[in-house]
Length: 115
Image: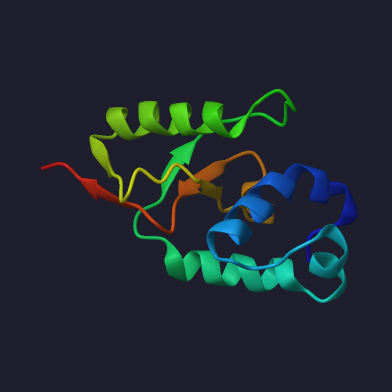
């Protein structure tokens, strides 16, 4: 279970993913009824390919910054980002053992390896 202290760090992650999935989530219900665990389990099922992105907890780091970092990492790893309807909503799937690593995905997009 994600602790209260980690909630602040995770809040953008889960609320963004939840909006993409039309899933109602707040700090209270997520922690009290275990929805964070439910979301983590289901994010894993939604992932097509995971791209590792380094990021910090800096509050000034916006979703757009993370998207831009994602593009740089994808380019380096020779992946391309296939948009569906120009959707820019990103979700970052995090696990406690990877607290310093970000995993970017999007339930509306696919990442495919360029051969």
